[in-house]
Length: 178
Image 1 (cartoon, rainbow, N blue to C red):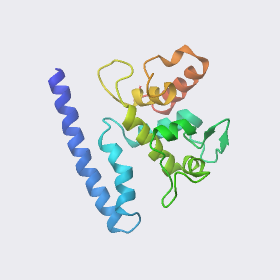
Image 2 (cartoon, rainbow, N blue to C red):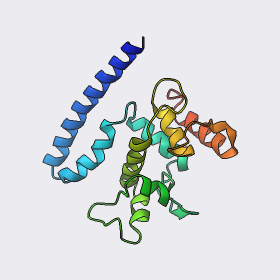
Image 3 (cartoon, one colour):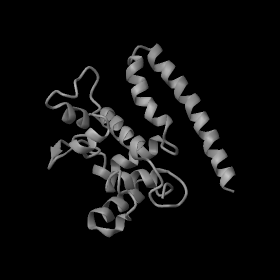
Image 4 (tube, helix red, strand yellow):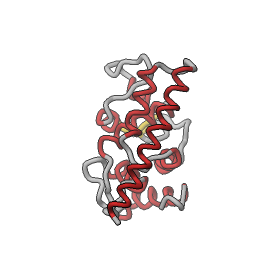
């Protein structure tokens, strides 16, 4: 049974890589982004099983109900509610042509929806694993990583009031994911 599950994940990953490669070629050929910028966005996706657009939307919804007008408050910025420590852990992603050493680079990236997505992707690529011990690494686990942190993703979310709120928003975002 485990071998069959592994094989299914492997086939899905190969198909995702093909789709992402076509997407990469289309974007670069249309001149919207440089090849380096596109690769920087796509590369973490190739390492993450079961991460799809709906999951990214849910992670945003869980953090701030995906409030694209959210500024910086109490050390957390943007629609994904990203802290400077999280940003540093995610390789200090910046807006195109920005410098990670520039004062305000973190805030500017975290406030931009697309740039914030790249931060989240890098963070999840770094820490992604099966946090709930169900044998599958999926959106449930990525949500736990975002709430608990990369190194301590295993504690259940219902252990705190804030965690219960995250869990409720996650279930409301897409009940099929949970």
